[in-house]
Image (cartoon, rainbow, N blue to C red; front, side, top):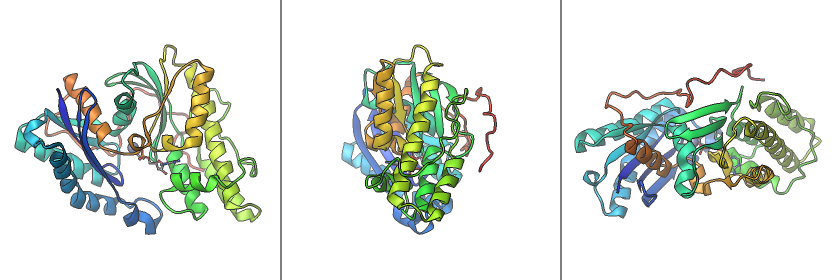
Length: 344
Ligand code: KG4
Ligand code: ZN
């Protein structure tokens, strides 16, 4: 059975995993760097890259030890080659190149977004192409029609902040710390989601794109008004994000006929309020709702090894001269969203 080593280092998680093409996760490790970045309220790229250099070799050793295997036993080595923080991407990709070179194994240079997009198939064996994917992470907010390995049609993207970025920035504004998503979700539990009137940017517009910058500014104004408890602002913010995601996804469902399921992936898909609302939306359309388990939603290397196995089996391998890419659209043919790049 095809076996891949996967390596992930594109943001602040260092990870390694061994996964087979028939979905056996033989071993996986994720080392977060929260404590290193906490004092800065966000990921510091240089600190992240240096941490990957120190942590990654040990994690790779550990997964081989746990599985009782060695590099010679894998069929190929997969690593994130972008998009992401370029210093970190280079660390993981170069480690993968070194191993591939020394062990004479093929290299699979993966688009990190592709790994998120295919990750639901690792936990859900009966999920079939095509499916509509809402990819919501710290760096991305996209709706994609996932039509096959290497075949993705982008239906929507954010014109300013990503959903996770909105959570992280709002958490910072509310003094909830980093990482912001789980902190906002926890704080929101004690709040009233109808307490603070916040905008739903782009909701109702005819293109299914997203915008979150205005929402973040509204959180700042609500905080500075001194009229609201942080719990109420957090709950109202989360509800506004939920409403925007649902509204935009509903529109995209109309543009993805034949979709077999509504799927959510990426770190923000760990949010229970978002999962609940998307499950209800899918039910409305008579579709199953699929979301990977929480640990597979946030950055990890099992999804890299898994997507690597699918690409390897499709004959999609890369040379040792493959570049590391800070930017790398999954659907290069997607048109630029109108207003994209304009931040409020
Ligand atoms: O996919 P991911 O681990 O990393 C990338 O950005 O690629 O996503 C991280 C993002 C962060 O912005 C984090 O705040 C957000 O996912 N996140 C959440 C939750 N858990 C993580 N956002 C909302 N609710 C959560 N429970
Ligand atoms: Zn990610």
